[in-house]
Length: 360
Image (tube, rainbow, N blue to C red; front, side):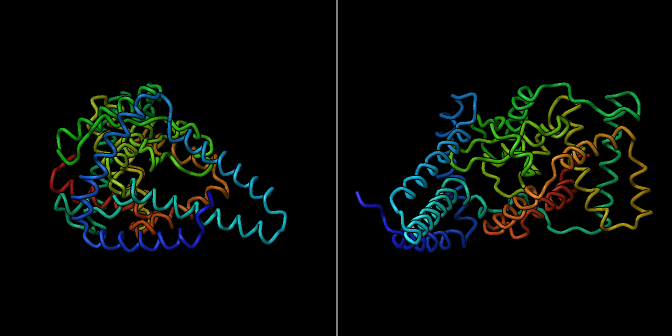
């Protein structure tokens, strides 16, 4: 059988983009027919299959695709001894692979980026003032200090999460399930998070986890600190159930962790949100004002806040910067116009939801 020529792939891709652009002009269509329709049906089926395996099927799939591509590269090398033909064949392989990846990514998961924003579904305002950010931060500091003192019995000792990563993955599922029942925002069909087989490479790339867009498995980097693990696991399951935007997955992950029965998990959720608020506040305040706020935080909380920063700094490299640049632009292509900075919209959701349904 003769291979399909690149021009046919390109023609099919153009048709695909036209249909995609028609569908995504209306977020309600995407929400009704894709997120709550096709995607939910596929998620239920694929989850029932991948849950049969204790390891990440998607990670194994990626390995298999890598081996196949290496085999194709070798075949092209052997088939085309002339440099020009060889480079042309390699170029065709790259184009075909990229087009197939993007179309499969979009159809199996990526269209969730174009569904109704969570702020619209919850009827929340958008945008916040410096005063609103300061007020939320102070509420968070008070709640976090109280939890730290309750758990450790003094202000100096950082909170330690004693559970192993396997237990926390299971507990994250319970948190998401509990949030689904209490809010009715989304359907939970036995989705679960799994430790990634590629945790070390993910660490050097600067990622805490990801959702495999083909097997829809929520993958968590098992190298990250235990203090952030429950929120990260909940965040990835939120992606899995259809919240594609990073800010929305942060928000769902935070609420799911905060609903946990164990106070140490609740504390992890508070630390997660406080870290975002402090980072945003630092650019809004003078050095003296920010230092005064920082000094109001218990020393034990300081240690937990710095734990995550010190961990990522120990693995920081040029590789991290390159992959963050690529990922940021990938988010922009997929309707997250702020790129990586879309994570900061989490604060927006938190401020206005806290006004509507006080959580601190």
